[in-house]
Length: 152
Image (tube, rainbow, N blue to C red):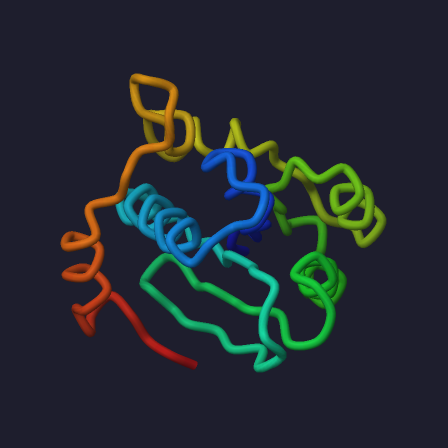
């Protein structure tokens, strides 16, 4: 079972953005993709969506926009609908979401623990303590490679 990631919570925690921009989303996607590429782990990154409910697969990372309701609702539904909810690990620091996930039978992983497990750097902060800037050209090359993405 892949990790289920609370996208807006991770952006707020590691990019220090209370209202995530598209740049914040892209930076988080790039960082997570890079960290997961070196492992066999898979993750689904949830964001609040526009109602379309689309999922895009980028190798070990899939990005899912919620269709109806919030990304939190989509995460809880994914846990509750899983064949083995106890194997679902949701990465969030949101206490409300964590309680709902536990009620559905899932497990919680703190973002700091997740980022420590999948690479150095503690989740996007450089040596200065400020969020790292993503190399957009590198990101565009990686995501432009058909082998790194599949739309569903």
